[in-house]
Length: 320
Image 1: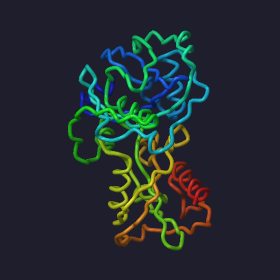
Image 2: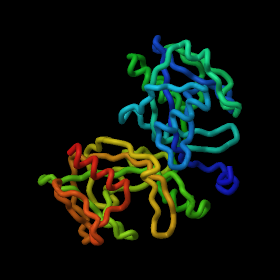
Image 3: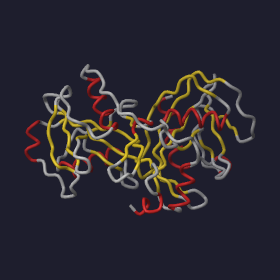
Image 4: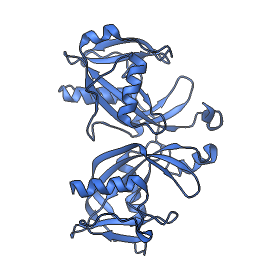
């Protein structure tokens, strides 16, 4: 709310976790929301430093009073929330693009008898609904989530509501920094694994930090993680990929990073593998190929850019 006082109603990106809970009959648990009176899955924005599964569990408990022991994140890409269709305008005029992950779990229908939402007013009512008889849903994020479950059940997708065109690509994070200063902020984005025919991995030396990193960067409002990966790959290397395969989403307190200027970000990053790479690598001494068998070093001349990049490379070495 402090940010909105100076940012106004302009779109922000909300790192959010949704909890898709089904009972033994395949029905989905929905809440009637306090802000617009419509229905949606339990869920909401992450707290600083929180990972998506922790956030989904917390939101589920706050909004229903229930705990789901087998709640787990859905695999990519069905678990991923992103894109211009997930624009939402709240009744107070605030605009957001929802990005994040969906979690899924099961509870017996009788669990609803012990539901006890908190007193925030976010939840007016809780009810189980068959996937082929859903109520009026609050926004496209909820429709998209229901479509994940409907696809699993062999049902056709619900139509999404029209949304405004996404803003032109600019420098959202820099504009936001002028308002929020160096304080921690979620930085959704994408990184890309590019290998050559010898199995070597492309790394870049960052122009400001002088640390080694992968091609990648931050989402712009309304952009998908895949679009960010493609755009950043081309901007930073001159290369294009015919296909980008989503591998893993990295988020949580271990991926907080402080830039030399003091700006603090909590990365929310999808790692992609590039296939069908074409183009000429932009000539620069800042390009470096690491062989697949070598471990990242921490020597001054080859420092890696934080725990996110180290985790990306561990994933690459483990999965190939």
